[in-house]
Image (cartoon, rainbow, N blue to C red; front, side, top):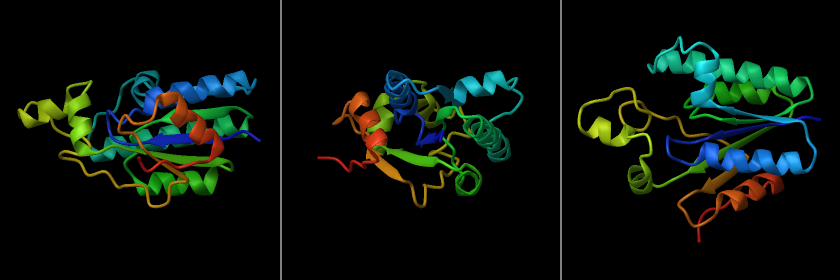
Length: 172
């Protein structure tokens, strides 16, 4: 039966990097699979939603329903999204039969060092708003299946292997 691997965490947590490695591992096993990246999916859906709490909730539910559709069609899904809402993750558990929730947790100082998109620095300068973890609260996952502390002490490929094995990693 197909699975949805729902990889969540703050911006800069490594969701897409780890998700891409997981996708490659699934493909090596000749599993029909697809990667859904939050930023790219916004474009696919027409970039019609902003970044307010309400728009983020609508966007997350779009991803959830798409994952349910693809998984029920026999396709494994690796969905990389901030997904800041417990109600979305609860919907996933209730509606996606083979749902694996992965929380990539990263210490704040490392997120601010990475800051690939410049989100954290732009908030500090007063140039941005609606940034999760800054002026929008992330509801941390209540009961993720897997937690990986992605502080740089484990490679993306190792994190992907942990996900396939159902293993959590809490640091060295």
